[in-house]
Length: 291
Image 1 (cartoon, rainbow, N blue to C red):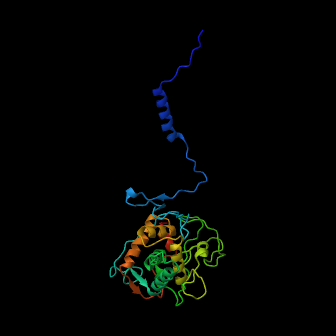
Image 2 (cartoon, helix red, strand yellow):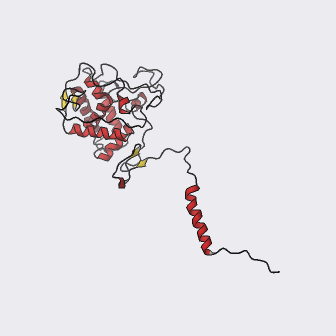
Image 3 (cartoon, rainbow, N blue to C red):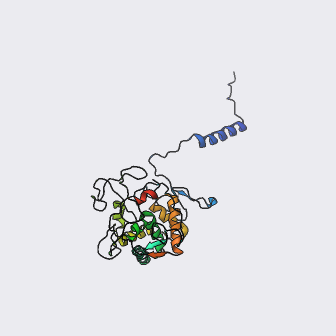
């Protein structure tokens, strides 16, 4: 008897099966992400450049976002504050309203920007961006409550970084030298550096031979160096947004910093340094982190 040959599938059936398999592969194949770093989401040009939290603009490639902010907070949006024009309702910074800046702080911000202009001329950092961070993190060192050398007259400390709330758990890294806590780290100074980050950006802004995060000149310069690190160009809005996001990975934090910076560039009132600490709670960065 003649052998029966296997029935051949029609060309149309084969094509249908291949199409079904190809389409199903997109659905059923698992995505392997275990052990891989979280990718950085770039801006969508069709979305007007609006960035969700933890996103980075595409204009600055190869920028890695730190897992925590300079002050130890986790990526979480702050509570933005409304801007008040000079001459408006008196605010925490004095009778001229929140756009006033104490004299010593203004000098420290401009000094830091001048030094960076010589160190990294391609960064194009201006004093207003540093001042904006100083305003949000500590209300300009609690209203300029500093001595003639720029040292804060009392410590400005963030929350204990034991993992509670919106903050990371960071065991002590400085033996309590800067934050007075030998168990857990705390953010220190007018722009709130945690000790481990301070080690990488410790600066001597007033030329006294000491790098002290409790000194406004030293920490303002450290902030400037941090913002400019990685070869960023801050002459553009996108460059500033990348730099500030690296300082605190939150879209609303970035928006708030840039809003204050723009307001400062439009004009500020120089205030006398305060004789008492004003306008800042014990944990000024807690409000900024939305805790």
